[in-house]
Image (cartoon, rainbow, N blue to C red; front, top):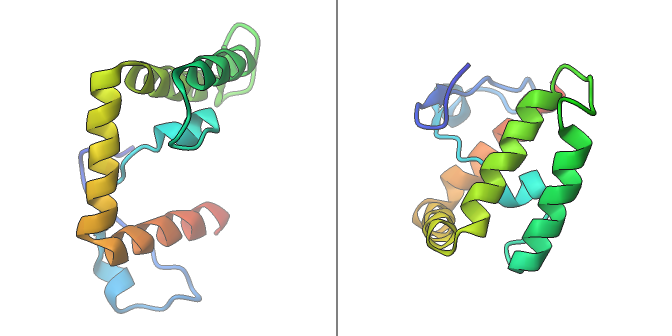
Length: 119
């Protein structure tokens, strides 16, 4: 299992062919807003409410699904980052930089991640 700081080699989706996609290294950045089901314009109250809902739904004591514990940790991590103003600003700045510095690579990574999930 790859962590968020290591590049992972993207698999090639059959409909995308080779080329740039076949050798591209993708750095995966967790989307904390998506983990909580929020937009980036969410207020602190929205973040707290979403965290409580998601935590209750995915808490291992309440949910026996195999992925519940991992999902719960993801929700906790998202809340820790987004509820702290300094961490949230750094996270938002990094998200913005990733989109502005290399929009083509960012879009490619998003699509590859999507196709790998449905493949």
